[in-house]
Amino acid sequence: MKFITLEPETFKKFATRHPDKSFFQTTEIATLREKNGWTVYYLGVEEKHKLIAASLVTAKPAFLGKSVFYTPGGPLLDYEDTNLVKFFFKKLIAYAKSHNGYVLHIEPYYALIERDRDGNITEGGFNHQKAISNLTSIGFKEVHPDNPKYMFTLDIEGKSAEEIFASFKQNTRNLVSRTAKKGIKVRELGKKELPEFKKITESTSERRHFVDRTLDYYENMYDLFARQNQVKYVVAEIDDKIISAGMFMLYGDEVIYLFSGSDEAYMKEYNAQYAIQWYMIKYAIEHRFKRYNFYGIQGLPDPNQPGYGIYKFKKGFGAKYGRVVELIGAYEAPVNPFVYRLHRLLTKIK
Picture 1: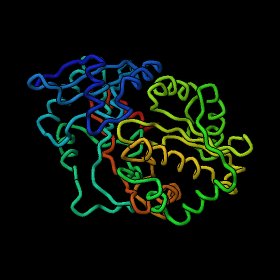
Picture 2 (picture 1 turned 120 degrees about the vertical axis):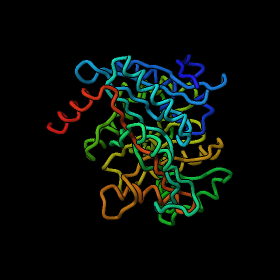
Picture 3 (picture 1 turned 135 degrees about the horizontal axis):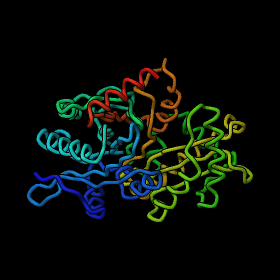
């Protein structure tokens, strides 16, 4: 095996064919991160002249002049191949050290355990616990992820829109039908209209106490992905007033419901997000995507925990073909142990 640097196009060809591909591991996201002050590297492992592992790796000074190295949605490799995992990450840690790094943070888009729509482990399903053992054996420790560890997805492969609609919970079907009767119109936005999208997400973030993305982010994502039809900003309107909005990524085999917002004054009467979801589910079916990804839920389903309502909303669309996906999570390995321990100590004190 040989640890190598890659040309962007070589990485892109490998990444687009990988079974665990994600829009996070793309040259477009690399461009976005460069705009935000990150340095970008493309690194991989070659064996017998064949590329068997690769990653977009980003780095940015974060503490005492030292850099955090981060692989969003990656690296892309077989995490159950013990020899490959050990070789690649030891080389990657050494590479980060030689480039002034103090920590390596990874967040693979890699499922851990197969679960059903209620979050229960599927009997006889896959279990990738060996991947965690491989990572921890070389010094990685699990940390809080930047992106969701649990998602709710809908299997749409080979199914018609009528079949999927019939599989929704009764209440979800009723609400979808009601949006049509109420006269709600759904359409896609162009770049010039993104400030209107931002108004909806910003007001929602203030109401629900989360940090919204900047307008620059939404516009940059449009510039980077819209040309390939890999991002959509969708809104629901009544009498030409936008009352709900959603951002969707279309990459690989899935459509991802990434961000959304709704005008509080119209939520109870119109339930416009149901119209947006149905619009995009139909789009995903028509364009032969295999999976509709409702994205993050807050942990495994628990009626007593905050955020259960979000899971319940998403599960309404997946009463038959939905499932909870548990990703492997986020992990860190010290690159400069002294600086890493000092940073963690100061963070705890703060």
